[in-house]
Image 1 (cartoon, rainbow, N blue to C red):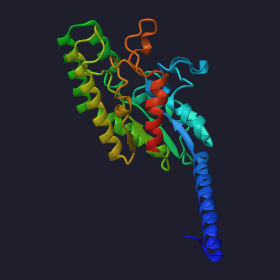
Image 2: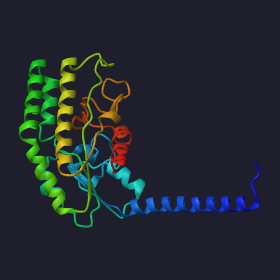
Image 3: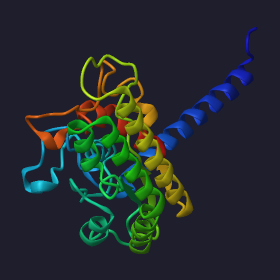
Image 4: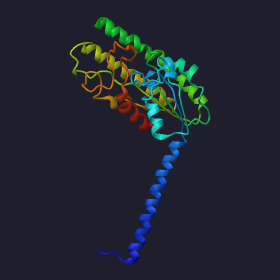
Length: 269
């Protein structure tokens, strides 16, 4: 059907207006990202241990230029970016050592914390070096800590973040499951041990999500993003035992940061 000249003219005006509005929306989105004052807190999963390319100035904190906070900042050019996450950090370390950059002008905060409080490193060491029964007993001990002690520690941490950055959107990120069960691994831990460790990760994530929600924070679950990329999957985004650099064991690779943590964080904010 042929349009009249008047109809065509009106259509062209609508199209032009639509394009102008679309452009304005795109510009507004860019401006919003640029206006963010972003602070990245947390433990080794936020500092980027396992991803390599560490900032020499970060020392034992091992902050990687391939960690998801840096990747997000590079892509979004926030007005300011402070990266205080540190390998080995517990909730008390976040409170005492990482909150300096927070203030009333902070608009975005990310954090991973709780795994070290629950004894993550000792659990994995026990399971790698000792018997199945000892491993599962240690996992259950960690789960009891998550039930009885960790919630209070998370409350203190989240309260401290909110007090220092009352206007910020806070994204709390969880931890991946480590193993694909019945996967490609022919040696190493037993399937019972792998299942117990995965269950402990889910247990920790559930507790963290509950505390985050109770503080009005967004919880970003990375387990789904890592599904199909666990250890024993054949396409792992996680280091298994790395005897050459033991500290990187059971941490995300650079692909885990860019393919797992970054899109999960981006979706949450």
